[in-house]
Image (cartoon, rainbow, N blue to C red; front, side, top):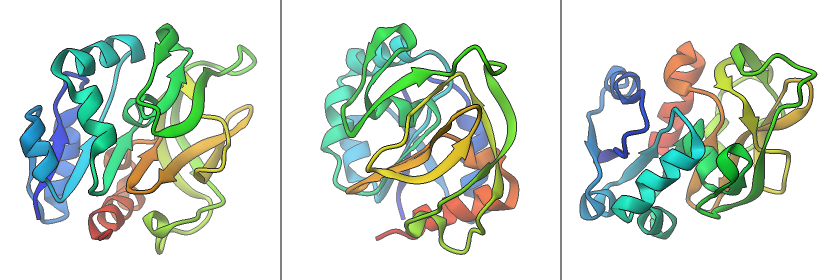
Length: 194
C-alpha cells in the first residue's frame, strides 16, 4: 500500500511517519502532484496558521490537486480545517471540500485548547471498534462547527466537529498520531478503508 503524506511545509510530519511505521507501513513524504495522485491513501497534515499554510498550497498548485483526489484522504488538525470552505484564522479561503466555515473559540474558554478530550457520537468506519467517550489529543484555537458531514463531536465550551467525512475525504481535528492506542486504531481504520 502506498501512503503519501502531503509535504507543504506545515509541520509535525515526523510523528505521523512514526505512527504509520508502528502500524507496519511506510509513508512517503511528497509535494509531487503525480506521486500524490498515485497513492492508495493520502494524509494531509497541518500544524500552524491557516492563511500561510493555504498560501503554500497555492504556491505549489496543491490547492487544485487535493480536492480532485479520488482515493481516501485524511486531513489532520489544520489539514481538516483547510478542507472546509473558509477559516476565520487569517480570513482564509479553504479548499471547499467540507461545507463548513472554521471559527475561533470564544474568549469564555482558554485558547488554544491543548490536551486530552473525549470524542462522542461516533459514526462511520473511521471509528470502528472505538468506544464512545474515548480520549484523543488536541491543540487548536479554531474549530469546525457541527454540520451534516460531522462524524464525531467533542466539546470545549461548545460542541464542535471532532471529525468530518464527505465522499472519500475524512478529517479529524485531533492528532491521531499523538492519541495513544485510540489514535493508532483510528489511523489503522483509515488505512483499511477501500
